[in-house]
Length: 270
Image 1: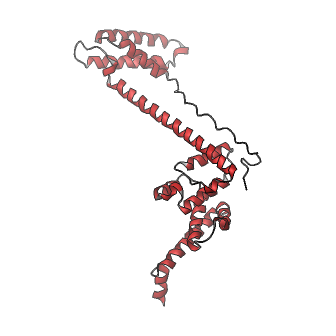
Image 2: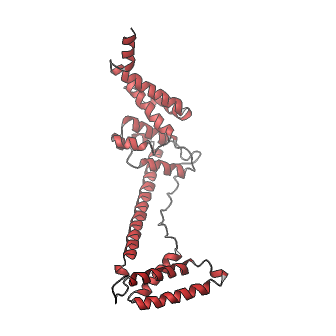
Image 3: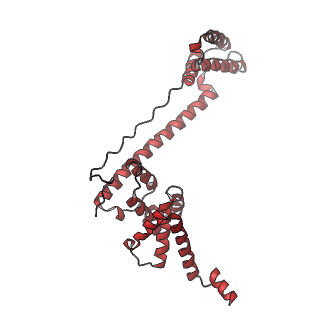
């Protein structure tokens, strides 16, 4: 049976929000330093010293006006002139300032490039998550989600679907992920992916998966539809469901190993 999503809605899916490139916030201090560096290019120590005195004079003038007391850009420009003055004072006589050889400037440019690359990666990942969420929504409407294997990153897609639904818990998606974890389907074939999911999925989903896995070991021929109660128990009583899963797992291990702890205790006490 095709499930309606979101609850009470029709079959029309909401459009995925556009992933807009985040704007870099305006930084007056950064602007001030860049202005100083452009102006200082080619200046020798004497010219930088004169520019520093001019900046100090402007700072004293600004201090007399309340509306300029919090001039972030002005303070940054003064600080940068002071830095360049010291930089040329420590350099060989006749050296002129060149931002292309300024270690501080180059470090900032490298940091900017790394930040831009990180933002670009975030945009690509957000676009991937949005597209995958659209795909899973379509599969739900077709009633074929259960036949689909999860992929790496679908935990974040679950969060996106929940966000789109205004926080409504996606019970069908949660059950799908829990079954995939228990049966080691899709990227959950990799033990590392299952371990990582412990920090990405909510406790009820993890408990549901553990309980399904324990039940499957006891009754290998059981069908998923026969264990709907596992989802209900994991959702209503996650702690009890987790304890039951641990108990069943221990019972299975002891049954498989004749020399298990309980067997050994029984023989010792006989």
